[in-house]
Image 1 (tube, one colour):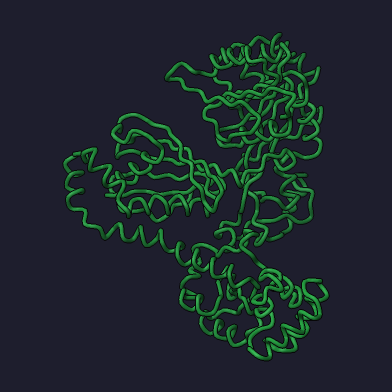
Image 2 (cartoon, rainbow, N blue to C red):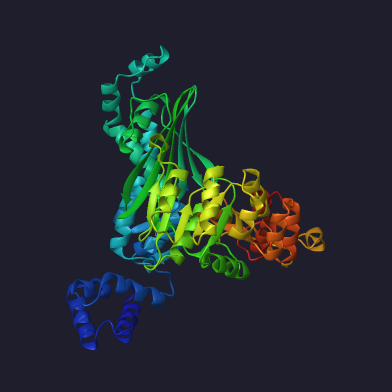
Length: 571
């Protein structure tokens, strides 16, 4: 770097209060004797830390500073960045490719004023270089992580097709099974252990919620569910199906010899010192056992009602209901719509040392401090109903029931709500008003339901537009004329390296919130249809799922196409 740049850099360090003027003079003297860069000499002398040096240099150059702690210092996946800048070049020059957009390549550099290095990068990659600044130690750690692991799964998958499988294949062709000892031995082989570890690790890195390992006649399928959508990943060779599933069973403490019945288990892993729970489900199919691994990342879970997708009015209605001393609060929606997560957010807000909270779940997805959680085990008679009956002898204030599945469970919930308990639960219905009719259909009498039901929340999960590539456009005259969209500009998905070219990154909720008013209680007592209940709730100000989605379209959070896909455009 130029001396005049470092001269101003030293003055800036003094101005920031990180070193004194005398320390600067000492460092400059050392620089004259030893040569080298002033910042590195200051770090070597112990006068400043490396991250302090780079932070100040970034301010001086008006350049973004990236660090491992921010979570942004991760190269984009599947852009071939490891081929643009080879590992040897990256190590030698302390540079790391982060993302590529058209002809522009963002590169983390320790010395962004090294014009010769930037010119070499331009010639090497054929791209214009957009430098960001980082510490040398962070760059070296990230290089090791990226080049060491980005290609590892691909290499492991590739090598699986090169393995000599004649014996195994012959056994499968005649319909034989490997002996238990051989199956355990193969599951514990280094390549299989490594492959399972890499499959799980990459899924976590890509924010996947589920891993699907599926056998078919001539191939093995590997898919990740990311933001609610399944994406195919290059799968291992078919002959590794048995060892892979056996390895998963061993980790989940399941019976690897049992292949005729479904099995459920759990794995706890630690990635970068953060605990991650993995729920394992194994089912027998005609071509062998399918494994689904549900990833529950505690570190990435936010249980806060303020971030669950409610608008201000809906949030006020929900809080009024959940802070009531008694009553039934229902969250409805299909499987995978975030119902349990919303209720966990409620529990996190209302829990305190003065109340006794008990839950019965199937399964317990997340563990919450200060809450007594029970997982049902039907095989030993521990069902929702039997657990709830025991709960009433445990002096509860608040009860969380994972799901209302049958009349007995529903009756206990209703009676508990009527006798001074706050009950939270979920139900499978398409919208909020339908929950009333569903409960009456399974046998709950209106005279019990009307006074006990406090509020019904229906929700869906929708994908959020990637903030780095979403593109604004004007809604059509038809949409404006029909009053569907009120904003002058809305956004659509485009796709970039930061969202794996999907155009979306992360998810949020769209919700309809139906407080049970006196008018709705009267309709319940009259066994009114859900259409009539819906009409009265709308008149009282209830926004539908579709309308909730449109507000998020107007706010630039999601696209109109996503809302239409999730709600079918209905209101």
